[in-house]
Image (tube, rainbow, N blue to C red; front, side, top):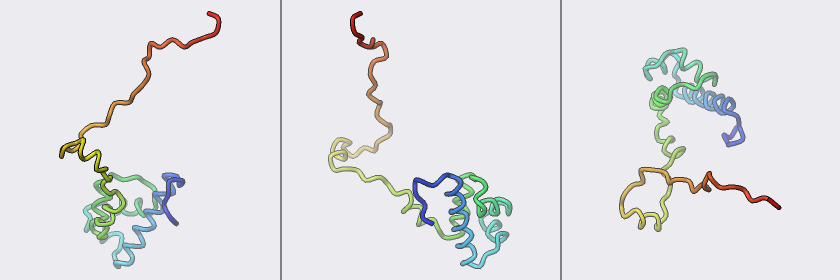
Length: 115
C-alpha cells in the first residue's frame, strides 16, 4: 500500500511497521538481533513493527541505520528547492526565520448599514 496524505496516522504507522519488518526479515535478522544492534529494547522493535507506538525519532533512526535505510530518508525529506530570485534576495545567507503573517489590524470596526 502506498503512503499518502489521506491515510490516518495509525495506518501510516502500521505500513511503516510492516515495511520495517519485511526489511528486517530480508536481512535475516530476528527482532532481538535488530534491537541489540540498534541499541533499543526488544519491545520497542515489536511495537514499531506492529505500528502501535510512535517511538522517539532517535530510536527510529537507530533502527533505520541498522536496516541500511538512512539514504532513503534523504529522498523522503529532501531539501526544499530555492528559486534563483530567492537566492539573489538572500545574497548567500541562509534563511533563519519564517516571515510574519500579514494580518488585518485587530481594532478594525466592521461596517454596518444605517448606523
